[in-house]
Image 1 (spheres, rainbow, N blue to C red):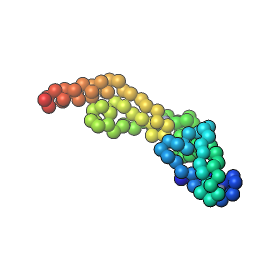
Image 2 (cartoon, rainbow, N blue to C red):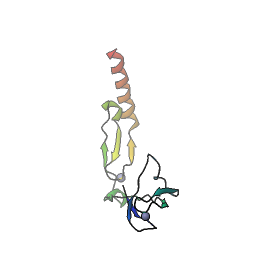
Image 3 (cartoon, protein in one colour):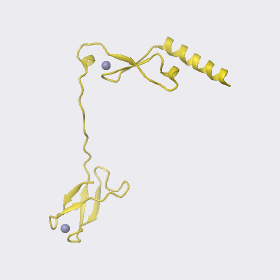
Image 4 (cartoon, helix red, strand yellow):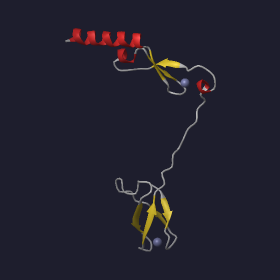
Length: 110
Ligand SMILES: [Zn+2]
Ligand SMILES: [Zn+2]
């Protein structure tokens, strides 16, 4: 919920989102001021928040690949993701073997 100042009476008005109404950037929406009952137009600016992390692999160091956790675990075997930049590396040999093992396990389970 965010508020604007009514362009007529300058009072604070909470923007009332109705589903997607009011949420699209670059579109004009209308709302009635609860104070002076004039209808005003407002637009929406979507603000992006970012969080920054260190990434040694982007500064000359090697990626720090970690095994990913999958369910079932076999499907994650041989797949590694860099803990810093999210780059993915797949060891095809290991992965294929693990998937094969998984499929065999499924067959046995039947
Ligand atoms: Zn007003
Ligand atoms: Zn990386």
